[in-house]
Amino acid sequence: MYTKLPMKNQKEKSVSFTGYRSSKIILSSPDPDIIGIVGERVYQTIISLYAHGYIYYYNGMSEGFDLIAALAVLKLKELHPEVQLIAVIPFEGQELKYSDKDKITYKHICNSANQVLFTSSNHEKDVYLKRNDYLLDSCKVVVCYYNGVRGGTMYTYNRALKRGLQIINIFDSCSSIL
Image 1 (cartoon, helix red, strand yellow):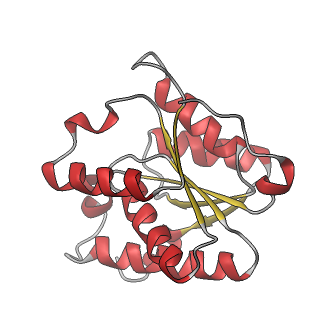
Image 2 (cartoon, one colour):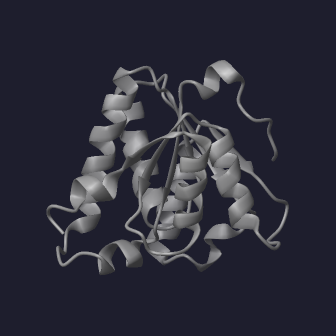
Image 3 (cartoon, rainbow, N blue to C red):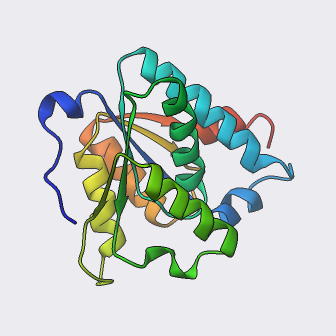
């Protein structure tokens, strides 16, 4: 299913997420509970964003940071049903190579999201970059986990900087414990 970009007034209240897969997050930290720490930092961040009027949360649904962030949004949504989670998936079947645990989490998130959309009809060249650009086109604030490692997160982070979007880097708030 494809959908239009959000209207301007919705974009002013929208947040997108970008970050690494679990393995890159874990490798950057000696703390065995880093995933839980990152999840709590994301949750505290979105509570603050919600208090400032942000109710739309766009998520790229990749393993690692994206799934952590989506679960945090769903936790906030339990307290505030007006919160909207929009799953922005690069192509149907993205989750097929995920771990069994992440496949279950992915399915739960998709079933709980307010909207699920695909940015491409199949797995084609640059499908993830197209998804990442859609995420940036949809928001005013980017919440990320970026520690300088090259890849899609670096691409999205740098494009967000060039666009002048507000960036909240969860890595910065976790770096004191890493």
